[in-house]
Structures are given as structure tokens and as C-alpha cells.
Image 1 (cartoon, rainbow, N blue to C red):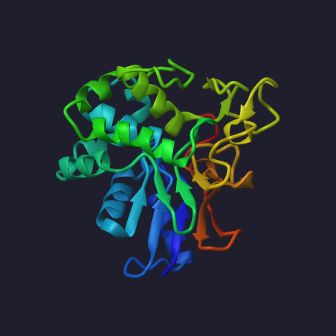
Image 2 (image 1 turned 135 degrees about the vertical axis):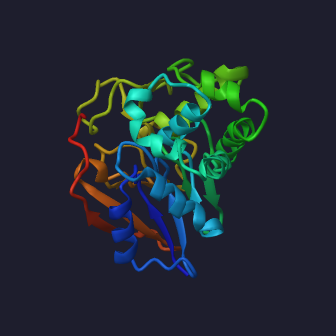
Image 3 (image 1 turned 45 degrees about the vertical axis):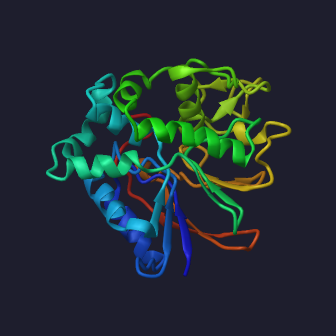
Length: 279
């Protein structure tokens, strides 16, 4: 059995299938971990969603910001409707409700204690160790699966609060957790999230650092796999592996074969690109 972690797919179904063939993924024997953002912007979000759902317990997918956009749209929050038109086929599909129900029950974080790997979409606040992060993820997962789901979808968007505090309550607390897990790239030295910088390290405001380089990061002793940051591309440092290598923009789709070894093996498939960078 092999475990393969794959970066953001964003509706690029053909490239996804080509990568799985390239790595000889076997649904009967292997496991697939996905960093989220399986849908949106690319041409075949519905097919991607159906394929991963059909894998059942052979796949683990954590939720990304675009996956949450889909859930928000399904509940009538159309704030970013013009940017999410590739999601319409899912919302009009005959199996819409089954797909959305499955998506609501995907986690925000997955941790494998045997191999000491943690799978997330974007980032972790520096003060959260793995056990704390799992508890924070569980708070959001309970909301997604419970009676507060509609309220969450209507109040999900926003950049505030941009600094974690144990004193946060209600939707402010939930939004802060979601923004860390699904939108985080850079932060200030005190852990304040920044949502303006999207470029490669070195291009940002000098007061900001990538979330994984904050001194004293509590999760530094676990191996963290994440996506979301296409301009960073495939990257390994500080006990983290960034797997969003910009397939949608003409980069690559990346898979990482996991195991007990300190250096997992990367595989990459060159992608023609569906959108121009910045589109």
C-alpha cells in the first residue's frame, strides 16, 4: 500500500487522472490524500468531486477555501458568484445533495500519528501544536455538520478577526479558525494573519514571514503537508511540504509518496493551464 498526497486540483480533472496514472495509483490498494480546493476555476469540478467521493475511505480530503465557497453558494451566499461560475454544474447536478453532504463531512485537518504527517489546506497559527489544531478544526467541523451550517455559510467571509485568541467566541472564533486553515500564507511576527500578500517569499512586505517560518512554531516537529499557495510552488523546508504547484495556471500537479522516510518522494505532471496567472 502506498499513500499519495496531491496538491490543489481546482477542477483540472484530465490532469488529475493523468497524474494518478503516472504514479500508478490503485484505488484498491493505495490511499489518496488531497490538500483541498478540488473544485473551482478549472473546467471539470463536478467530475473531480464525483471521482474523489466515489473513492470512499481510500481518500482523505481536507477542505480548502474554494470548497467552502461551493458550500456557501449552495446555501445562497452569492457574494463571489461571478468568480465561481465553474461551480454551477455541481449546483445543478442530479447528485448535488449527495456531493454537498459528502463535502460538508470532509475534515479541515487530518493527522496520521504513525507517519507523523499532518494534512491541511493553507496554514497553522504558530501557537497551535497538532493536538490544539485538531481541536480547533473539530469546532468548525461540528458547525459544518450541524444546525449552524446555514449561518456559517452566510457569515463565513471576512478578514476579521485576523489574530487568534482563545477568548474569541461565536462566528468570530469560527471565521478565524477557517481563515487560518484555508487562507493563510503570510503573517506578522505576532501571528497576525495577512491576506494581501500572495507572491513568493522575498516579494512580501519585510515585516511579514511565511507562516511556517514564524520562530517557535508549535507544529514544527510534525511533518505538515499543505496547498493553497500556487506562487510558492512545490517547496520543502522547515518540516513542511507545499504541494500546490499551479496546475490551473500552467504549472504542475504534484503528488508526494509518503512513508516513514524523512524525505518523501515527489512526482509531478506538467499541466497546459486553464487560466492565465492573475486571471
